[in-house]
Length: 253
Image (tube, rainbow, N blue to C red; front, side, top):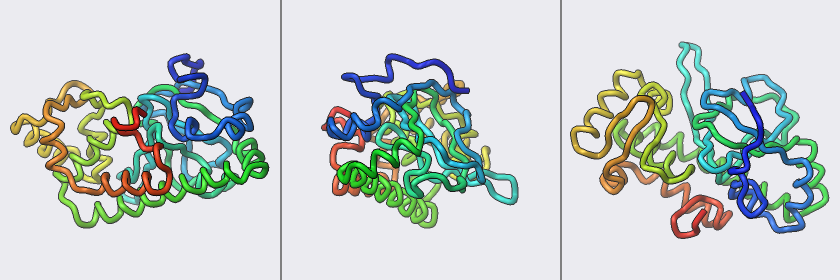
């Protein structure tokens, strides 16, 4: 459920979202009057398949969302995670079309939201604003392509490490990741018992600990050595296409 604004969502007068912070002053001024900051809780649903997409949501700070594809056997599979490097809702399609997947809040926190109509009007007035969002759409498609390849060729252990590191990087970098075994299983597209066995092996190796409703990463470097290179490929593409937007320790975002 969306609730009241949170002042912690803003940095230097802008929402703590790297895509919004990447805009120059003139472009940000075109959309600033229409931005609203709201709080969302984990498991809140922004869109279901078939919903009209009328609002763009920008995760801020520790917030994280995922694209969830429902399947005929009742299982949901998560495809990509979006944190403060991006936005969800009408980015590729320009809005005003039905949603294809569920867009689900993974980690609760502040979000900036903007009506699609206001974003499209601003893009019509600014070529540089159109360029930024076109570049971001390219980066998001790259994530989808990489995720498809990853699911096809990499082991469950590699993908587990990748998802945990990806969640850490896209939020606040904390060693505590609010992922349950069930949520991790959905990210991996496997049963909960399988995900639990992988987590137990990581725990036995001293890589992480499991807590109620969260994971504590004890050895980030060991976790990094166990993951595939898919997330690095995505980060490299972001740096080529939209430098400074993907959160890294080097750029301080």
